[in-house]
Length: 422
Image (cartoon, rainbow, N blue to C red; front, side):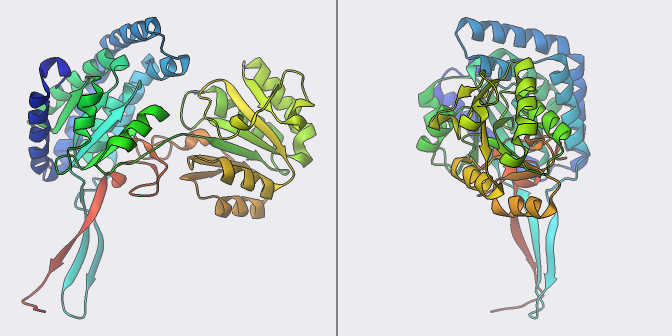
């Protein structure tokens, strides 16, 4: 249901209540039905690719006219490949095991009681997101498969794209006899309305904001509902003395240029001093060819006059652009110390063939994902085999890292007895 169909706050509250009521249907929906809806949606998206891209083109034009930043424009823009990936992600989620009802513990106690721990849905999830239209599909798919109803609060900059995609979601639900109330799209940009949503404890069970720091802080400040947060993606790569230089060049370059506005792009590269002379000039050359601005410390600056002097604010900064910070460090301990000081707990990577240093790095850092000899860009639901993700949590409660199906459930106890009393 879009805001054009919701004339006032009372109507919106009514639809939120209907979404709550729909959780009882979702909790018992057969896995085959859920998978059929997801595959149906994948097919409809494939058949409607042209219409989706046309809607997105209008959104992008409006956003440019409104002066939206280039970083957000990149997040907003859909391509034919991106639309195809939505379908691929839906089919991957359909192929994954259904977490609802999964038994994770089954013990018989000395009392004779049989104690089972069973996965169950969270309830109603409010997803608040900016720019990325693909989140409409990913969030619905993961909430639906995990038995949760969802309220999708997309940003106004992606209103036409989100509306086009959500129309296909409702058609897919209806095609398989599932009440459309299990999902609603809210495109209103009224901040007072959002504040009211964030106070609906007992109706909404979890809020997941996905967007810029301003949005995350707004939700954090006003929500009375438990939230999963992701403030920033300040990702680091440490190039150890033993790194394979040719592989490291490719990893560092592509970790920045393939999706500079993504939260898993590398923002800071740390290079061991022992390998700096052989590695840094070649990496700077690659970055120059790709149009990447490098902000480096004094040691990095000696390798090229094109390097901009890094300021204190550049360490721990999420550029979300073709900009990267670079520092030369004396050893792995200095690299770990730097990362601990500036991390956002998103993703860190070490490029090294030294197994002792690999272990030290992995054990010394507690970010949501630590990568050995691969790109930070792999901290993503699709890449880690989750099918899709609803976001990447950088807080350890209730989930940490990419949130897939399992992370959208909780666990309860089912106890079976035979007349026992206490």
